[in-house]
Image (tube, rainbow, N blue to C red; front, side):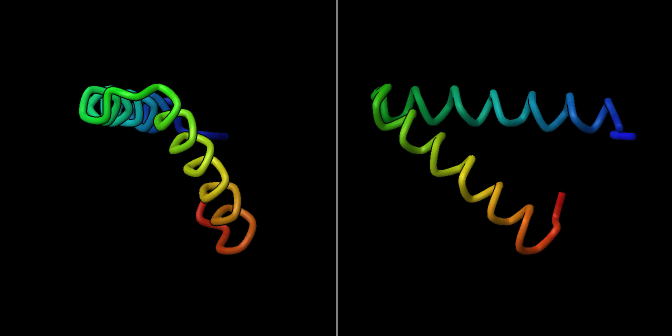
Length: 52
């Protein structure tokens, strides 16, 4: 079972970081690319290192 509180906390932090970065870059296409890269990195880290 996942810890619901920790998942919500991670999502909130991710959203805050996303908003700050989007305000910093002010470019949707760049944010989409960064988001895709982040997802790929997290998936690779999950399978290779078993972090999550």
